[in-house]
Image 1 (cartoon, helix red, strand yellow):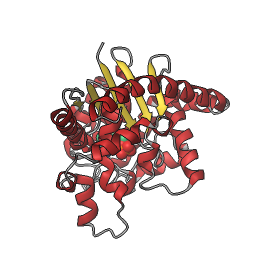
Image 2: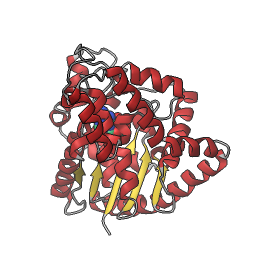
Image 3: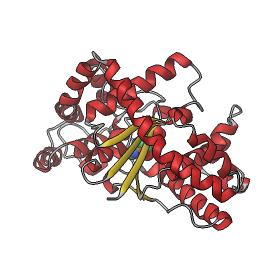
Length: 323
Ligand code: AMP
């Protein structure tokens, strides 16, 4: 059976972009693949500098995944920091990675272009920790959004580089990017949905907040009575990602007929989101009553993940000569 692996940072509340671009694929793939999923808390440390917030975000993310259908009997679900081998392998990769290679990484180039003064070694090195996260488990497929494609490529290059220096050790993972949701647009109608742009729709937000976020989606100024092009509309783009094909066809007809305003479209989207995420929102409230269960899932996940990670590291240590 092929193995998949993916991770999400506990750096805030999850949004529709995270769900459609990555989480939904993880959940769907549980039945066909051997699955690993981790909460990337060490990555989140590049932005989260408050222990209480880190703990809260981590717990919330675990609750989100379990509510959305992650089955701990099918997926090894764990916290990155519970498996210290991630950092050990990252250091080994650091020692064979040319600086110039990481200087070309998008996240680093963006930070430089924005003239950020508080950039850290951690942000620069982020793709190497990610290469370690991935290669430790020798997965075949990495389901991610488009923004992470380069990082998976860096992991492949790092595997090739290690194999060249020390002999065949790591297999090369493939990114899996679902085309129609590779980059989910945010409520500003321009940028990808992202916490850092403040243009998100949080799927577990209270109904009032969710409503505000949906109603804030930027649209053009076509008057209510005129026909509208659904392809150009962010409301329709998001609706298409969660609705069934008959519902999409119906909404498209309303856009094209005219007499249907963007406010009406937003109401339909809100209704659909509440319906689509209704069962998960309910389940999350139930899970919150039993936090011990969440801890147990992550502890068991870490134990199982470490078995694989330590076997890979035993091999790596022999290859590099520290054993
Ligand atoms: P992050 O919150 O950056 O850890 O992202 C978690 C996962 O969500 C990664 O696989 C991202 O590629 C994916 N993702 C984040 N934002 C979007 C978006 N706007 N569209 C599609 N995928 C996304």
